[in-house]
Amino acid sequence: MARLSRPVEDLKNRYDVVIVGSGYGGGVAASHLARAGKSVAVLERGREVLTGGFPAKFPDLKNDFQVQGKAFKTGPDTALFDIRIGEDMHVLVGRGLGGGSLVNAGVTLRPDFRVFEDEVWPGQIRQDGGLDQGYARAEEWLRPASDPRATEMTKYGVLADAGRRLKREIVAPRVAVSFSDNVNPAGIAQAACTRCGDCCAGCNVGAKNTVALTYLPDAARHGAQMFTELTVRHVAKAPDGSWRVHVEPTGGKGDAFVIEAAIVVLAAGTLGSTEILLRSRERGLALSDRLGQRFSANGDIIAFGYGAKTTVNSVGVGHPPRIPDLEIGASVTGQLEFRDPERLDHELTIQEGAVPSAVAPSLPVMFLPNGRLLGALQSLVSGVYKGPFASLQTYFAVSHDSASGVFHLDGDRIALSWAGARDEPCYHRLDEALRAVVETAGGDYVKNPLAGTVMGHQPATAHPLGGCAMGREAADGVVNHKSEVFDASPGRGAGAVHDGLYVIDGSIIPRSLGVNPLFTITALSERALAHMLADRRLIAKVRPLPARPVPATTPAGVAAE
Ligand SMILES: Cc1cc2nc3c(=O)[nH]c(=O)nc-3n(C[C@H](O)[C@H](O)[C@H](O)COP(=O)(O)OP(=O)(O)OC[C@H]3O[C@@H](n4cnc5c(N)ncnc54)[C@H](O)[C@@H]3O)c2cc1C
Ligand code: SF4
Image (cartoon, rainbow, N blue to C red; front, top):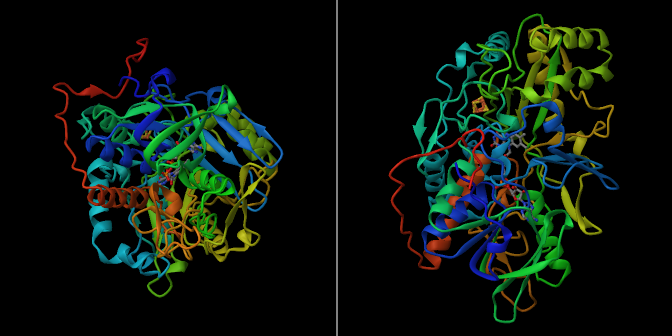
């Protein structure tokens, strides 16, 4: 597929719409607003990575990690993985044109209906049917499916076995992955998943239904312009009511500048959108006091089992495969659900996962602090696909927390405070359930193989939610149910909003979902866009698809345009 992003020289001073960030929220907004005939610019701080260009070797992957703490920063500013080391909790997010979809496992689940019965949501979310329509539209684009051959994957079998012993039935969750060759709704030809297990380092086959292969090419086909390696600092209202977007080249490699727009959609994710609004408030924009609150980690953890008595195959082989004929499966192919009809907050889901092939050489090092030197050395000799790491169990688990984290600015950067985070009851329940699962296969539960590093013992999440949480009015939320940002200027009504300023991404979700969030983020984004188009009387005009499908992969050696 040709490059979507343009050189910065093409950037104009003014657009109808500026969209900040290009994950699920940004992709949905760009596609709808471009279809509605608006001039749209998408500004993304990360870089564009084409199918075939995701890190396949350890040195490349290592260079695609940026780790930032209070007083340090390592790795490039355009790395695909952005890890924030916090005093109470660490957060991992994806970075690049396509946002978290580039490096996530693509698990596409709808939460239990009780999640939306929580009064923390504005009533319209439950009442107007827009959320159901949002899920339906999200489904058309992301086309989630269970792997039809899930039961043949070894890691699925190991979890199924654990399920039988624990009296839980395994299910194959839907993932945003194409399991057969197809042409997607954006006219892109996607190849079938090779079950290489590398989803979380980026799909080099073009089988994962990412934002970069769906909503964004659709937006580009309808005229949206995309620019990478541009970081938005803050936004401000101009005297004529339009918005001034303050931008700098990522990494400070150039002069800052301003772009104007009638509509600004902040879609920079939980960390990005909250940080932009915190900075904007500091510079005088009247925003709700709730800004920064209701951060949830979605009760999400990654854990391992080491020393199982059986082969698991939870290390990806990549594409082209390092070990011919070894199929790992998509990152997630099976899950056990621990339901509780009485207590929603006690529910949890355990998914068998795969670590990407490029991580393989680091596995022995990761597990060294736990005193497993011998096994690790053995693995180095025989390769992780044969030695003790062939029986490594990798699990992703999701549950419910109290959404009590709070973001603030530390200097100019966003920081998270959540003093009681590690004592949240969900982590104890997760430990218990994961330990039971791991031990059924004869392994030892390894909660955090990186505890000896800067990671320490704090919990970590890849599902950050909240910060710009929705509410009924400025007193209890940052945006309304339509994603419009509340205007907290003195004398304005409680429900007054800033005309033309929206937040559309995971930051608007006011609580844990108990399942992986991408489907709900996309559904809420679709819902917000349906309201925006109706409120502004905008009508989508869909252009015909190109006569010939565009291949998702860029042929080797051919520079993308
Ligand atoms: C390894 C991993 C695995 C995951 N697996 C799953 C899964 O299986 N299922 C699931 O549902 N969820 C999963 N998630 C979480 C999911 O990917 C995120 O919840 C989702 O991507 C969030 O979508 P979003 O639209 O809120 O923002 P993002 O997808 O985070 O997109 C925000 C974009 O904005 C950009 N940005 C940020 N700040 C700025 C700025 N100042 N200026 C310009 N651009 C900016 C970022 O670089 C990013 O590209 C996973 C996440 C990770 C990291
Ligand atoms: S398993 Fe491999 S081919 Fe399939 S979606 Fe994941 S990365 Fe792509």
